[in-house]
Length: 184
Image 1 (tube, rainbow, N blue to C red):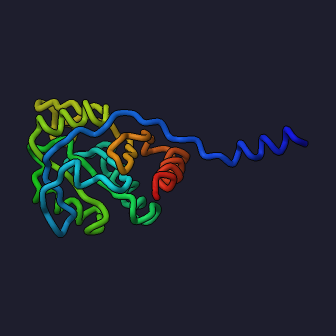
Image 2: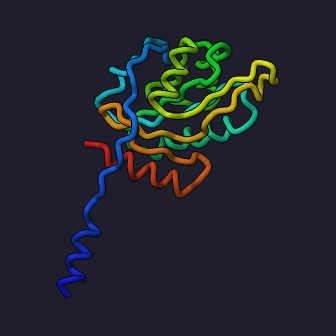
């Protein structure tokens, strides 16, 4: 009886999510289909957010990834931000990203898209998110970049707290639970 009570008590405790890397400072441009403006690491502090990575001319996994993030707009608490980074900044200008945001029904103020100098993005992907994005300029535009399709959960202090397979329903449920656990 005592053992069962102790196990019940322990089972009710929420384990802390691991802290992976910290997102470094950066300066990018963000769009949401309606507005465009500067975006820095400092702007993202104070609330958890989910990062994703794609490029607008992709005909591989990006349309499915965008559709899953679109569903997260309703599934996640509104205090959890959604931010998609382009992995092809030479093509994905703010204007191109704004049109793409409208195409995938990103809600203004809810889901933003970021672009910037290739070197800044490459450093952010490698050092902050620890994800890969490799460009082959000789490949057709739709296949130009090989990149991560993981969704990355970042806490209110800018620490990566989890990686989730965007194609796995169980992983997406875990993302939702873990994002909730990071809310005040």
